[in-house]
Length: 347
Image (cartoon, rainbow, N blue to C red):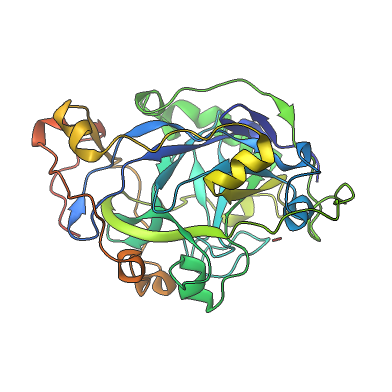
């Protein structure tokens, strides 16, 4: 599929130079609307192909990477890119932006991708009106995932990423207008830092990935983890302001990110998993920052209709045993423009 996706410790490098990190964070309550929670470090990433004797056979077929996640743990995706790229994000092969089924083509009605570096991060599914619903890890089989509620079945789990680059003439035009059109204001350095390229991931063919190494007969069944919808937070998913014809029609890279349970991570990689994130009370007691971000030059996408009816994971798994500790106003750091008033609001 052209250029390869690469991994370096906790960072994925995609064609075009785009970088994606999966950040650990605090899970929000499922009532109210909240500022962006802080990052508590990146999830570690490992290549599935490096563990042919221990990874599930279906994971070897998809290729890609795995990361360890606790049930009900929340995450956000951190993005950076030196040039504009269009990034599709699937949660169990449901588009996190449009709520529509996964597609190998960019779409504008509704928009089924985000544009980097305009979109510095994404913390959850698009709920419109300047808000998202937090990504929260839940097991498949209960119907709690976004995949299960939107598609009616839970088959894929995980996260899917696919990147499209600009056509050459559009890229050259952007370079001439770079200073005026794409000013990222140093925002990305406020939450995460860029890392270097690492080992290459195998390229994935459109029909379902590379031919995997022979799977041993003792290969264990795949742990079944996907992403559900958690609390609501203030975050815009920005509209692409360029013609769809500026983008290449074929993706230049894609990767399947498998969500491993902590025991499965230890079995597959032989490594201990990170400890569960610090509790909210301790974080707030330390006075550490939460974030707000706003870009007056960008336009928020409309609510994604298929995602509007997605119920929070608490409706399926019960209430969180950990009481919510309110965030003090002085802990919210504003990034980007002055926001003004914000209401509550394949493989």
